[in-house]
Image (spheres, rainbow, N blue to C red):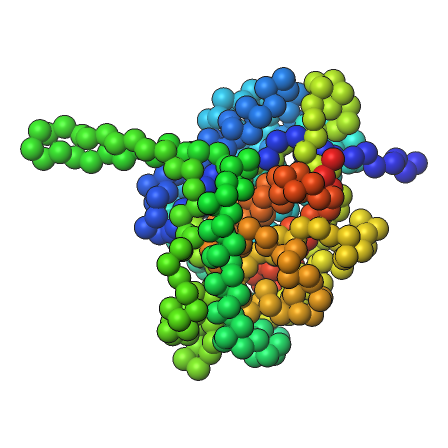
Length: 398
């Protein structure tokens, strides 16, 4: 007998500031420590919730090895001081890992198998670089029908720029817009609601005294936003992926470090602990596209998520379209006729950074708080995904 789905509600959503990799503010901060801090901050937002009722934690991570290995989710749950009864699992869908974690946590609640779930994402691109420390690819990806899998992300952006005729000038303008929106958001405090401060501890040997000097400072602002950039500066950058291409470092997402956490509950838990929901999780969809033009993935995932939700595109008030590259963002916006005023109102990954597996959870926190702050109804988080996918999730402000 089929059972009616119940709703999953978000009652806490927070994220760390995003650090630049590999030489930014979190270069010496372990990813599990970033996640632990964010887990504790999320739990502090709902002090009346008994942590013993939390059943599981699903954590997205794009390269779960080295400092991000050993089932990062379960290790972080224990390090954060949660009850040992709380489970933990790490999932990987590259750039959509964090959003997939949110969807999986919501689904456990929606089908009635859980009442309280943690969803998160974390990535340290300072400690675990793109492709990991020991990449070993199946040689089958170099066969003609699979060779698109072997393309670097930058080359896929060049292919999208060429196929969708996205000019260098348009990419530079888009990148500048990302920085200007993010800068304005920082100056007006729009990230405050979603931000978890992180204390950084730096230890330096003091050769004069023989002791170790300890310096602590707190960070509460994303590191990648550039107030000094301009169209002139962006236009002088050389293409980095193809000598005759148009994609530059300035029109690409930044490699980054960061974490995001959401707590999801059923209606039963809302009433039991007198919780106020921030948003309802509405729907999720993933679709595949040719790997060599992976950046166009949201073009397929967005309509699918809307169909699953029974909503139309014009009902979306806030769209977090992850800016892997300006070229792919503009191609998606153009093909779907997205309203640019609704896309990344506070800037995107070009300015704020893209800590791979964390981004979906981070941008979900941004959307959830943005909807409430501006009294809007529906928000969407969407991104392209390596090897040729798109993912999209929809939230409703409560």
